[in-house]
Each structure stands twice: as C-alpha cells, then as structure tokens.
Amino acid sequence: MTSRSARAKRVTSDAQVPPKGPVTKTRAPVTAVAPPDEAPARKPRAGRPPAAPLVAPTPEHLASVRGPLLDWYDRNRRDLPWRRTKDPYAIWLSEVMLQQTQVSTVIPYWERFLKRFPTARALASAPLDDVLAGWKGLGYYSRARNLHRAAQEVVARFGGALPSTAAALLELPGFGRYTAGAVASIAFGEEAPLVDGNVARVFARVFEVEGLPGDRQREATLWALAAALVKGKRPGDLNQALMEHGATTCRPENPLCLLCPVRTACVAFRKGRVDELPPAKVRATPKKLTLAVAVWPHAGTLLFARRADAGLFGGLWELPGAEIADDAPDTEARARIAAALGVEVKLEGALGAVKRQLTHRDLTLRLLRVSGARRPTSTPAFQELRWCTPADAASLGMSTAMQRALDAALTTGVLAGG
Ligand code: SF4
Image (cartoon, rainbow, N blue to C red; front, side, top):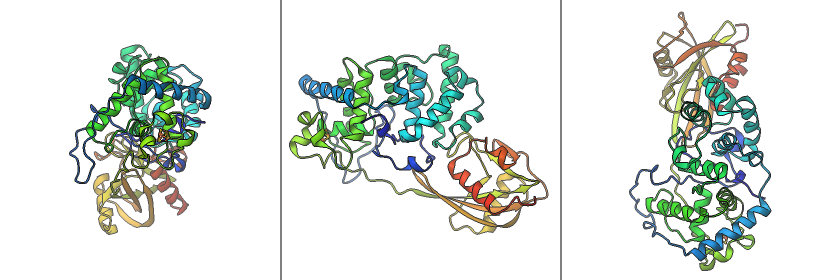
C-alpha cells in the first residue's frame, strides 16, 4: 500500500497558506529538496555537519535498488485516480495539488477541479477568480495562480498541450525541478530525476549521504543519485516507487526496515546508522503576524477586499486587513484600517480574534467592527473592493484563515437587522 499519496507535505518555496484541517498533519512529513539551481547557497551554520561528500554508487549498487523497488511498487501501488490517466494535464494537476496536501484531501479536489477545468485550455481561459474559488480550502493559493499562468503559457506557446521534457516544463510558471521531473517522467516517460523529502531520506540512508536539507553539496549529491537511478525502463514508476517507499516504509520515524525491499542495498541499515540519517532538521520558530480586520456591515453586505497578487494571501479576497503590532491598541488598529481603506472609519467595537498556524507564521486576525460616513469602493492598498452579501462572498477565493474570520464575524450577528 503505497502511493504518492503518502508523500504529502512536499514543502515548496511558494507555500504560505495552510490547508484545511487534515492537510496540516500528514502521514509522512517531508521537506522539499530544492535543486541546486533553485536554492541559493547557504553558509553552513555552526554545529551543522560538514558538507556532504559526494557518493558514487557502483552500477551494481544502483541495480540492487532499482529492480527490487520496482517489483515492490508493482505489488503495492495504490489505485489512485491520477494513475488511471495518461493525460499530462491531469497528472500535472495532481502533482501540484499533492504538494503540501494529503492524498485523501486531494482526490475530491482533483476530481472537481478537472471537471470544472478539464483541459489546460479551459483553465487558461477561466477568470483567476474562478480558479481561486475552485481551489478554495486547499490552501497554498500561489499554486493555483501559477497553475493558471502556466496554463495560459501552455496555450500561447504550445497550443494547449504540455511540453514533454523536463527542460521545457521548467520554463513554465510554478514548475520547479521536482514538478518538471515528476510530470516529464510520469506523463511522458522521460528519464527525468526528481527529489522530494521522502526521496532525500531514502537516498540519505541507502547511499549514506550526509548533511542537512539545504546543504548545497548534499542536494547536488541527491539529484545526481536520482539522475543515475532513474535511467532505465519505467522512469515514472521508478520515481513514484521511490517516493512511496520513503513515505510508507522508509519513514522518518520507525522505518520498517524488516519489510524493506532494498534492505540488503541499504548502507545505513548495514552500518546501524538508520536513526542518524538524515539528521533532524532544526525548524525555525514561526513569526507572529497580527492583522486588524475590518468588519464593516452595510445593508446586508460586508466590505471585502482583494489583496495584491504578490505576498501572503496574494490575489485572495478578505475582510480588509492591515498589519499591526501584536499588542497594538484598538485605536491604532482602527487607524491602520482607515489608512488602508483611504477613508475615515469609526470603531464600533471589537469582535474577538481568530488564530491560525501557518507554515512560517503564527497568524492572529483581530476583528473590529467599523463604520464610516463614506463607504470606499477603491483604494490603492487593494486590487479591488466589493460590498458583498455572505452568500456572494462564498464564490470568492478566500483563505481558510479569512473564511474562519468571516464565520466568526457573522456569528456575532453583525448583519442582523442591517
Ligand atoms: S533498510 Fe530501513 S533505512 Fe534502509 S531503505 Fe529500507 S527502510 Fe529505509
């Protein structure tokens, strides 16, 4: 029982917004391994292990991994919907959705999204708002924006058909080396390597690769190993087998070595170093981010704003928010909201706060009921302002955090009688 499924939580550089409930905890948390051309060189921190030595496995060692792994995959692969298609667009969509997200969450989204946007051409011609609304609840909305932009480029440059090589795919928005390798190998059968966190862990153990995620030489080593191993028959299956093996058998904690198809080839197992490799990553403490959020009722509607495309929650709709200090008084929060909206606002009262844990931030949304003599319809701080009923707002692309804030605001009865 394996799959790309369990390699959920492939962290990518554009990951910002946590998905709903189940995706915040995955069976096999992994860490993205940015390829050398995507990750800036970082100076080793004090206490880090030394830079990884390049390992150069023999052809026999590679073969002793490749064959058994493919056999194991044939016996254990799960029947997932995107494995029943050869459509590169559908496979690409699954790869993008699976980043940061569990397979059980992705399946219904993938099916719905594909029904709504069945081809790259259909996706390209859809308004971004519709795409973001189709992504609602899945989180990490930059994935949807990049998907949309890439689809438009696929139509403009390739007549609607995805290019078939990793090199060409890499030129599209949102394609890193991982996604390009996955689509090229799985959809087109190219011997294109990929490394995600699960693959990195498997390689670290099987080939005894030292070093921490982010170490440039380690990552170069991992990608070189992936390139060597993918050569041969069934490159797409080989890549998927590696990821599933890492997710379900060669797990971060308590790997199932006695059930492992490549145990005899595993250097860490032979040397008793399984618990040492790879070394645990030191996680940065999330930063605090507090936003004052305007709840401005008027005649059954609330004021909504669309953020600029760049940055956190880029392009998404929200109850208009402005960043404030964690301990800022309500008067200051009111002033920040007024500045963002470009009109005077009156503070009517505080409606509580909503807290959310994002990947790199502890987010607090402080809800403030406001009013004003002049209702704004545009402001430079936002792409767009709109007065909407909650029913109309349901079709807007909105982050899970903001949806919770809206729900919290509505439960206070802020629109009652309005
Ligand atoms: S023997 Fe254990 S550590 Fe080595 S690849 Fe298999 S599961 Fe992973």
